[in-house]
Length: 475
Image 1 (cartoon, rainbow, N blue to C red):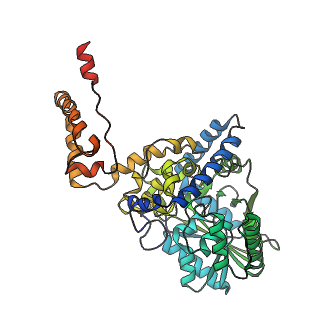
Image 2: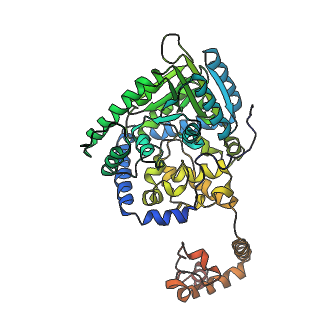
Image 3: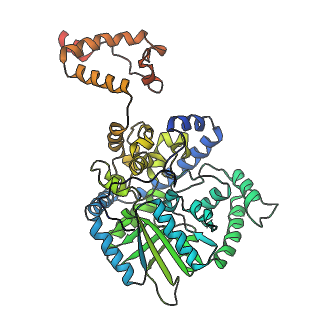
């Protein structure tokens, strides 16, 4: 089945990891009660923020780089059909095969069939948000194929039968003692005397994974970038596991979101400066692996690229929301967000947590399916300041709040408020009446029923003793 841009179809329900079982407020309530989780998150995000801030301060042209990255991404969105067709042409010319997947179901079926055709019952995986998004591991397991995550944090999540809670560090919610318990319980062949010393834990994972690398002939990856002019794919990572997956197996299957394409190598130069500083606080990525199709006698001899839509055309169709597709998955917005730091990623119910998840997930699924996520923010603006490609997340959150379904009572109150604010005399009377809020509701900061639902999670601002109108009249 073929697909094309301009089909504003959202990601299908019942497959993948874009929808949670509970609303954000319900899930966040439980997360806030977990003191260990909050300590883990505070320590990790504070450390990453500090490292990132120091290396960003070294660049005198950081703001110019951000502007360039934003401009490149905007240009890509405007030329996406042309760039994707060029990418396909170059990949095929280099010996690869390109598959177009309209949604998660198609992508999972394509990858499963490709693995089955090799006769392999196991695949090794490079850390990939796209495969998490579509629920590829679950689809492979249902087909009798064992997926093995090779990124250390993803391996921790997989062995713990858990879900990722951060874009960059999926196991950020775990401390080293918890990781030790997971390894002892679920890692084959682990030393019973394993300690929680980080080098010891890393060595245990390395031993297990090295044996897996050398005995598995099929790998599945995502892609950080794809260069349209040459058909080159790029993966950046910090452990070397990606390099092993991308070079050792006979067959390589890459699942990539449509938006990851960039026009030229010169454009890639900008993002390779932005991404490591914003994400891991490094000047460059320790491992940057690039490949173009198939090279006889060197690396995988069969390469398949699966181009994934899964709601991206629907995002592209929204002029006010399409900038969410500019995201380069650096996680900078998560590391500065006061809401994420207190609730963690699981509360968002999606593989994309934090501020970017609050705008991307509702657009991929349809706002109705993730109606609480646009409210998972204080609109403080820290995410916009941190984003290396200048995604205006706060404005997008407001846009999506307007699109979210609202109760009949809320709509009626907002219409009444708009009418009041549009009539000066009525507004003046409302200002005088607002002073009664000092003695109404919870500690004078809430509203009485039936409006009390609005203030269960919000404090009304304290009415001033003197309004501007009063001040103006007296002077």
